[in-house]
Image (cartoon, rainbow, N blue to C red; front, side, top):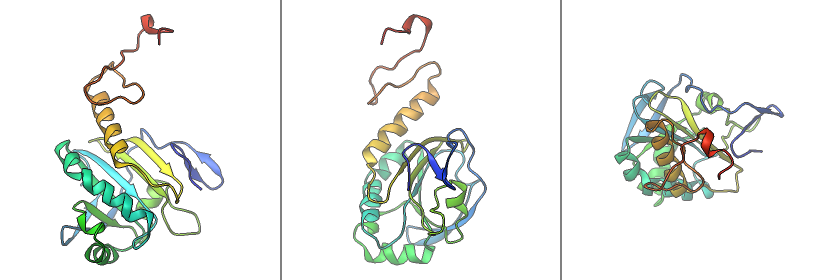
Length: 201
């Protein structure tokens, strides 16, 4: 069972990992026809998206991953790297990439997490099942988690909304004293919290 904005573990609500630094990991990924090693140190220096999903060769997952692939060029222009993660191996990722038209569009990293280290680091592993929930985690260039979204298995995510949130997070990070209101889009007005603004919204 999963909860939007909160992590669920061992029958109790855990504290959100927003504001916490990504924990150490080492994994092998499939990317653009090659197997490459990735560590937590590699993801620092730019914004990163960790996009967890239950399993390769499934049904909702390829629709989400294809949706994310469509915005990947835009994310790269924003200095954002993407890491999809499941508890499958990097070999399985390659086989899926080679056989699925939707997955064949992916140019971002597909991390294998068969030892469950990354999934456990983000508290997204289903206990006793061995699969990750649908969790999206966005970290800043320092490796600090700034955005979290977790949905149940039957609810797919929206890459366009993820893009909007990342733009807002980047704006907020680079404009101290300003915050982005609901449904904020790039170029729209922000808010500057102050004593004079209290009760005026």
